[in-house]
Length: 344
Image 1 (cartoon, helix red, strand yellow):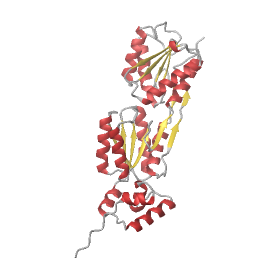
Image 2 (image 1 turned 135 degrees about the vertical axis):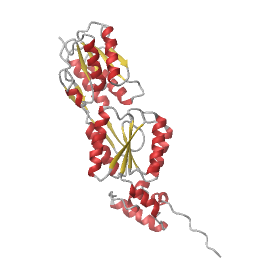
Image 3 (image 1 turned 120 degrees about the vertical axis):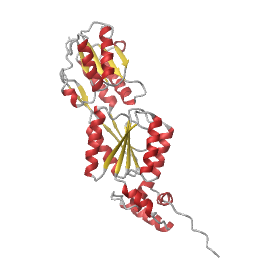
Image 4 (image 1 turned 60 degrees about the vertical axis):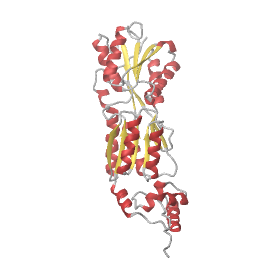
C-alpha cells in the first residue's frame, strides 16, 4: 500500500517556526555570504531540522546567481539622483555586487509593475526611492511579496512602510535656509516649489515658511509659486515674477527661495534675462548643492544635502540583515555663496 506523500515544507514554514523573517531564513539556508546573528542562525537550523526541510536546489541556484541590487527611482536625469546612483554603484562594487536601475517617473502603477517584474529576476535587494509619498496598495503588496520570497527592501525617502528607510531632513534644510534669508533682512519672499504630491518639496517648502516666520517675515509676505521642478520651470517662473515686479512689489529687497538647485539655476537665468541683478536686486537660493551650484554666476547659496552618503547608506542597508526596520535621517548644511546679500 503506497505511503501518503509527506507535506512539502517551505521556507516560510521554517521562518515561522524559528520566529524570524523569511529573508533571515533564506540567508541561513541559502548559503548567503551575508552574516546572520548566531542566535538567529541557530534557531533557523533547529527549525529546519525539526521540520525536515530540504532546500530546493534549483531555487537556491537561482537565488545565489543574483548579485544585483535593483534601484527603482523616479527620474534618473536629475543631477541629485545622478549623485545618489554613482555613490550606490561605487559602494556596491566594494561588496561584489552591482546596481541595476529602473525609472518610473513617479507613476504609482509603474512603480508596482516594475517591482513585479524585478521579482521574477530575483535581485539580491531592492532599493526604492521616490519624491512622492509611497502609499499605493498595489506597490505595498508587490514589495511584501518580494520580501516573502527572500529579498530585502530599502526605502530611500519618506515612508510609513515597515522596511529599512533612509531619508533626508528636507524640512530642516528648508528651515535653515528660511531663517538665514530672514536674517539677511529680506521681508518679501517668493518660494518656487513643486506640487503637493512631491513630499520632499512640500517638506522643504514648509521648512522655508517656518524659518522665515521665525526670522520675522510676515506670512502674507511669503508667496508660494508651484512650477515644474526643473531648470525650465524655474526660468519661466522667474520671468513671470519679474513681469509682476517680483512678489508684487519693487525688485529691491526681494528673495527667491527654490526647493532645489536646478530650479534656482533656472531662476537665475530668468531673472538675468529680465534685467534683474542677483544678488543686488534679488537674492536667490537653492537646496541640494549639485556640482553646477559652484559653477554658475553668481555662485549659488544653497543647503548641501549628503546625497552621496544617502546612496552609500542605502547599499549598506540592502546588504546587511537587521532584525528590526532601521530608520536613518541625514541632515543638510547651509552653504553661503554669492547669490545672496544682506538688506538694510
